[in-house]
Amino acid sequence: MADRRKLAAGNWKMNGTAAALSEVSALAGLRRGTTCEILLCPPTTLIERMARATEGTNIAVGGQDCHWAENGAHTGDVSAEMLKDAGATYVITGHSERRADHGESDEMVRRKTEAAWAAGLAVILCVGETLSEREASNTIDIIKGQLAGSVPDQATGHNLVVAYEPVWAIGTGKVPSTDQIGEVHDVIRVQLEKRFGPGVGRSVRLLYGGSVKPANAAEIFAVENVDGALVGGASLKAPDFDGIIKALDA
Ligand code: PGA
Image 1 (cartoon, helix red, strand yellow):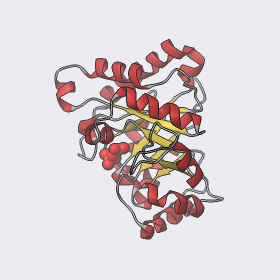
Image 2 (cartoon, protein in one colour):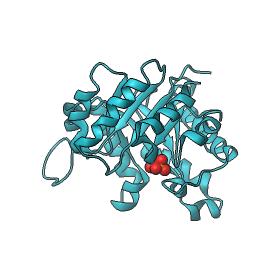
Image 3 (cartoon, protein in one colour):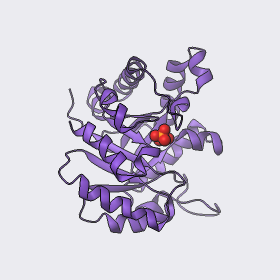
Image 4 (cartoon, protein in one colour):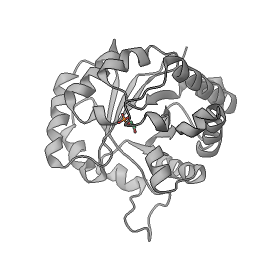
C-alpha cells in the first residue's frame, strides 16, 4: 500500500474572528509530537493572522474556496494566488455548501482546482451525495460523476486530496456506517487508479468528512482507504480537534 501521510483538516466555515486564534495556539501546544499533517482552513479574513500564529508549528493553513480566474472584475471573490500570498498552502474546492449555496457545478470546481494548482496550492476536493440520492441508490454514480467532472487531468498525490462528505452527514450528527464509508472510499480509490494509473491513484489521500467527532473518529479511521478527516464543527475547539488527531495518530 502506498505510504500516505495521515491528514487532519479543519474547516472553520463562516466561524471565527481574531479571538478564535487562541484555539490555534492551544492546538499547537497539544499536538507537538504528531506524525499527522494538520491543516486549518479558517475564513479568508483570518488566513494571514493564522499563518503568522502557526509559524514554526506543524499546523498548515488553507482557504475554503477560490475563484477560477487569476484576477479581475469578480466582486467579493478571492483568487488562489491571494490565498497563497496570505500564507495558505491548501484550498478546499467543491464543498457541498458551495455547490448548494453558490450553484457550483463540477465544471466550476474543476476550474477552481486548476487555478489553485497554478498558484501552487494543494487542493482538498469534496464529493458527496445528498440524502435523496442515497435513498435512490444513486450514491456511487453521483460520486463517479463528480470525480470525472471536477478532478482535473493533472492530479498527483501532492496536489490533490479527495474528501468524501455525504451531504446528509454534514453538521447533522448523522454518520454513515463504516461499511458505507468503506464502499465509497474504495470506489474513489479505484476511479483514481483507473484514470491516473496505480502510482498516482494510490498516493492521493482520501478523507472522510461529516460529523466526525473524537468519539467516532477511531472507528472511521480504521476503515480501509480513509487517510484522515475533513472536520467542521469539531475543528473549532482545540480539545475536540486534538481528540480527532489523537485517534488518527494511534
Ligand atoms: P461537520 O462538517 O464536521 O461539522 O459535519 C464537515 C464539513 O462540512 O467539512
